[in-house]
Amino acid sequence: MSNMEKPDWLEEAWQATIDKVSRTSQRIGAGFPHASPNGTYVLEHPFWWTAGFWPGLLWLLYEGSNDERFRSIAEQCEERLDEVLDGYDRLDHDLGFMWTLTSIASYKLAGGGEQSKRRALKAANYLAARFNIKGRYIRAWNPWFEGENNAGLAIIDCAMNTPLLYWASRVSGDPRYGHIAEAHMDTVLERFIRPDGSVYHIISFDPDTGAFVEGLGGQGYAPESAWSRGTAWALYGLTLSYHHTGKQKYLDAAKRVAHFFLSQLPDDHVPHWDFRLPPEVTKYRDSSAGACAASGLLLLAEKVGPLQSQAYREPAIRILESLYRNYCAWSDPSEEGLILQGTSHYPENKNIDVPLIYGDFFFVEGLARLRGANTSFWE
Ligand code: GLY
Image (cartoon, rainbow, N blue to C red; front, side, top):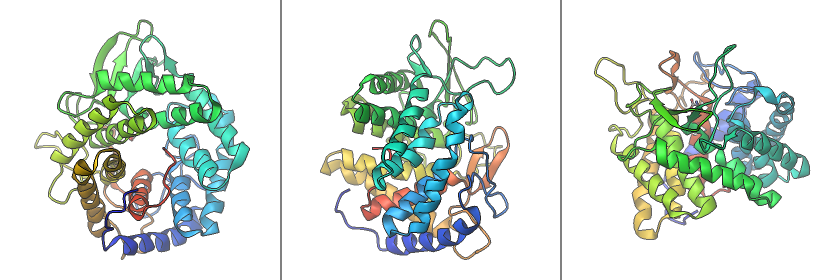
């Protein structure tokens, strides 16, 4: 973490977050919140891809406060996920989000020990097994309905799942996991990132031959639009791949995506859910994309030289300050979400303009990064 000056609102935002989560965690406990459509977080089944964000957020607060209540709930969440590891056939590529923010967090921050290490390695094995060697991509989902064949789909979100593989190579001493992560990220460079730094959400391949088929709109408005959270996943995931491999091509691409993302922000620095919308479509914000990009930009600022660093750190701070001042419901004790106005899935009309747990997580991670904390789950 750089020793540059910290913003004057930072400690106030951190304390407000601690106070609020001390309260909300009493109800949520070791549950798995996703979205808060009416002020109360809906708790999902632990199989859902978002299961790591709440324990991950609690680990961040524990690291910054030493409050054992946060640690205890995070550990209970990790234990609850054992049921999911045993039912592995229901797991998809989001294993990375789930075990990076639970078992790796516990292993790194709190001496989670051999059991946490084993859990995360098991998850890494399942993730590695999703690699399609012909297409050089990690398969995204399992069939959503009987008979569906989606073995050829890969999505940009998976850039954030590759840190689990880099970690597994490091702790096991076996480079195969990292080779798979790099092969997938090379496919991201080749197929997902457009020359202008915008990204596709989904790329479809022929799973038998590995041939490229087409780009799909997915959670964005259209195939050629620019889904803002997907852009944030790419920005952060490429920066992490540079961190783990030292390969310049990932840093160059992360910067290209960052420049596109920053060029599209509205006056209050918090992105719309897609950067390319026709006039008739409502430009809801997606605060989660802003929070994720801000935390990724802070890491990117550490990876470039001192002359370039402020170009990423300053906009990250502007995004986080706007989230803190304009998007948090500090004065409404009945709202459990930290940051308002996230958009989960506009095309399916799901969880629009609501707090989302991943938005809350990356907001807290951004604050923790600014405070100079150990936020090294992904690193
Ligand atoms: N597909 C995960 C997300 O909503 O970003």
